[in-house]
Amino acid sequence: MSDDPDDKLEQTRPKLVASKERWAREGRLLTGKPAPRGERLPPGQHLVRDWPVLDLGIVPNNATDSWRIAVDGLVENPLDWSWADFMAQPQASFVSDIHCVTAWSRYDNRWDGVGALHILDLARPKPEAEFVILHSYDDYETNLPLADFADDDVLLAHAWQGEPLSREHGGPVRAIVPKLYFWKSAKWIRRIELVAHNRPGFWEERGYHDRGDPWSEERYS
Ligand SMILES: Nc1nc2c(c(=O)[nH]1)N[C@H]1C(S)=C(S)[C@@H](COP(=O)(O)O)O[C@H]1N2
Ligand SMILES: [Mo]
Image 1 (cartoon, rainbow, N blue to C red):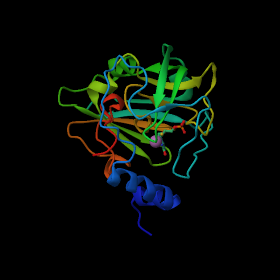
Image 2 (cartoon, rainbow, N blue to C red):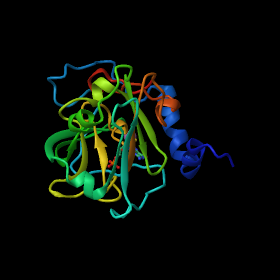
Image 3 (cartoon, rainbow, N blue to C red):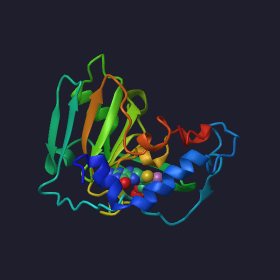
Image 4 (cartoon, helix red, strand yellow):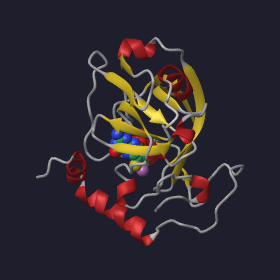
C-alpha cells in the first residue's frame, strides 16, 4: 500500500471512485444546454427534499475539544484556531441551494458559521495568492480560485437549519461554496491553504472539472 493519502482515500471505496471516474470519461448527465445563472435549477439537475450523504468511506470523528482549523500558505497572518477561537468570530448566516454533480439539488439550506471574507480579512492573502486548497480531516482536498472563495455567500458552516452540522455531513465544520458543485464544499475542513499556482484536488485529479460551475455544466474536465 502506498503512503499517498490520495491512494488511501481511493482504496476505501474503490468501486465508487471507479464509477465516478467512468461518469467523467463518458460525460454522463451532460445536457449540452448551459443555463443563465438567473435560472434557479442548473441544467441536468433534479430536486431532492432529503439530504444525501456522500463521502469516501472515512468519516472523521472530531470532538470539538481537539478540533483545530488553520489558514496558511501565502498569507501575511497565518491563523490556527481552536473550536473556542472559531466560535468567538463574528457569526454569519446564509440560505443557499446545493447542487451536487451526481445531479441532485436541494433548495433553501440555512447555514450558520464564519464567513470566508472575515477569515481572509484576518489572514490577509499575499498578492501572489490566486488559489485556495481546502484540506480535510479525511485527507480529502479540493481546489478553487481565490476569487470564488472570497465571496459573501461562502461560509465555514457549523450549523444547518439551526442545528449543529451532523458528523456525516461534515461536522463540526465544513466549507459551503454555493455557486460551485458541492464537491468543492469540503466537509470536516482542517486547513485552508492559499497558493499561487493551481493544484487539482481529489476529484479534480479524477476527471472532474477544475472550477465546477453548475450553470455552465462544468462537471468534467
Ligand atoms: N472531506 C470531504 N469533503 C467532501 C467529500 C468527501 O468525500 N470528503 N465529498 C464531496 C462531495 S463529492 C459531495 S457531493 C459533498 C457531499 O456532502 P454531503 O454528504 O453533506 O451531501 O461533499 C463534498 N465534500
Ligand atoms: Mo459529489
